[in-house]
Image (cartoon, rainbow, N blue to C red; front, top):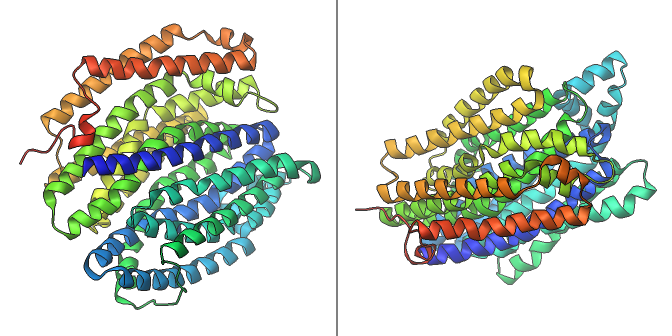
Length: 525
């Protein structure tokens, strides 16, 4: 099972890597044409709102409620029942999302008044910042239909993942990145500003993702006509699971939006600095954390449906071990190379070296919580697969309250960096409470082998980070370099760090090949 999971995880990781690399190119282009000024704050704030709702309706709550029910239907009733469920789910969810999308476009001024309170206050008082509110309300009308497209993309992706066709859904985001890059480069000269061009890029990216998945659904015989079925047995179960899941998934997204609301009261550039540092954090989080979570949820759901508790624990142990092995060096590398990465990748055009320096502070704060944030992605599915949504919801609410408390304690003293640090702290609390909940219910517990692995990985990552710090030039040295030299130096540091880390693991007795056989730390029974 672990070898199969590893293969599937690698497929998703490779596809996600392609998407993330293009996403990085997209962010470089965005930073180049927008910088970190007022229009950057406006576009990045606007882009958060449909993404927030996407996580609620599509990739988050719906998937967590839909995949376990779908896996059970497939295991017990076969493919015809799957097609029937897909038609009913698509029709029911689709009509609801259509209504939400239309309301969002019409009510964009109200939404921006809520999420951009600082800008709305300036608008009412006639201050210069009021222009941000007006322009954001306009851009939101363009970007909001992205929610409609991406909801059906997530639905079809969940179906294909259940049939172990992971590559299609993992590759789909590539089209969003291509559309935004093309819009920034080709439309900007013909529009008033780059933010409007990027907004149209978001719209086009959603449309392209939607169209891309249709042939694969048709080939698999899963392209069905949607129909309304609010009271259907399985749709009712999905709704029952989805309602609490909405609160659970919304926790992290609400935290991000509340961070953005607070940032709208801070100095110009705060929203952009947080965004670019968060985007770099999403790179390892997406390639490793989300990729592994995508693979294990259908497997955990199937193992629970067939009452295979031993394999259920083995799958969790495999994913926990892999997250630690990959997440710890990623965290260490981001912390040590935060400013060099930002200087190399983003400090071009309107994005200055000062912006890179400011964003590096929030990147370090975010990165301190990378491993716990990755662990949330693999611990929460253990509850979702068992159709227990309430527990992670309750834990998520606790984490959200803690995040706001941390924000209020830290933001007055260290400004936007406090918002990033609060996210890391609340994420760590969330991960710990999820693990404690699994232990309390006797679902999963770390054993001595996994704990030893964790200790070895921490030591190897620390030694790797020390070597990277010693070999890296100081800030003045990075600033004096031409772009090509910066890029070469950064690539050399990363290329050196990877074999050093895995070489140290090998010296400490860790064999990565064990992941292909069973698990690194198999649960003893």
